[in-house]
View 1 (spheres, rainbow, N blue to C red):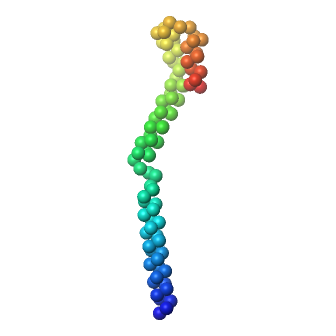
View 2: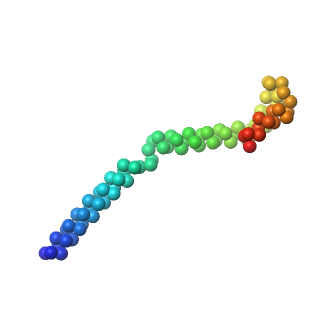
View 3: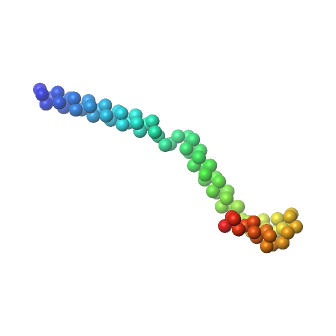
Length: 82
C-alpha cells in the first residue's frame, strides 16, 4: 500500500503541475487580435510601398506635366524609393 500512496501522490502532483503550465501558456498567448492587426498593417504598408516603388515610371510624365519640371528633377523623387 505504500507504493499505491506514492503513485497517487505523484500523479496528482503532476496533474497540478500540468494545470499550472497550461494556465501560464494561456496567459501569455501571442495570438491576440491586436497582434494580427499589427501583422495585417505591416503587410499592407509593405505592399503599398513596393507598389509605389515599382510603378513609379507610370507616373513620371503626368508629374512632369503637373509640376512643370524636367526629367532629372522627377528622377530624384524615385531615389529614396529604391
